[in-house]
Length: 285
Image 1 (cartoon, one colour):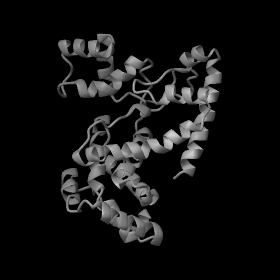
Image 2: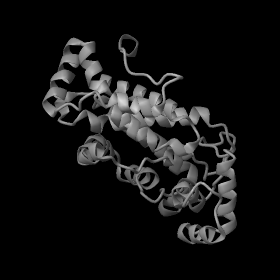
Image 3: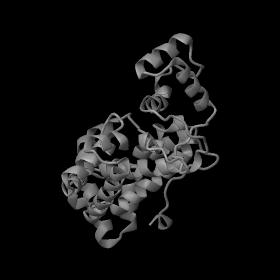
Image 4: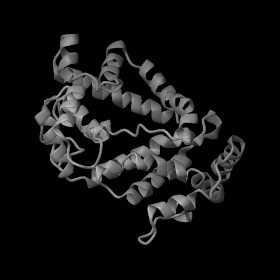
């Protein structure tokens, strides 16, 4: 689909600001127009209908991409990758589900941007504890400016995030030096091994996104809830404890102690449960 469509692009000479002004020329579709275009594309493979759906949501992509500019990658590239995610969303969008495209597309846009960040950040692994992970993903937003942290600011951040002041300073140095890995170290056999990309968040909501927040939650949770219900009680508990906790989730060792089995057994249960859920969620699309 992408090869057959002509979409706005950010060229080497155009600024992101110019692009942002240009995409505002595309109107936001009403629910009725969006439904009609989506049905036309789905049933007739009408590429012009697909193009209209895509360009009407380019502002959403630009908004989401702004949430990731602190990770050291060009905003233009983040937007282009997000646009790829938007195109994938349009291709998979089912208008009969009663969910607006803006809600459905957010997952695909963010997933494509996350993958781009993973591919392009070449750094060393840090942050082995939950507190350090929280420090990594909150330090930028807690800084008052672009200058180095002052002593009082370091003390405040350390207290808020429950880490040592020297850890705050070390993390700031690593962030400024672009030394953080977003991917887990595949040579590390530790149970605490993790992939920091899972913690990337875009917490700012523009009006368009805020208006669709409840619909987005419905779209993302319906399939997940059904898949969770298909699991046995223990498997469901493992998945929820590992992946559906706001505070970062429990470790394999913590769950092993809870169930009186080995950490390796918990890992096996998790892998099997996640595979079953993935299959069910793909089948329900």
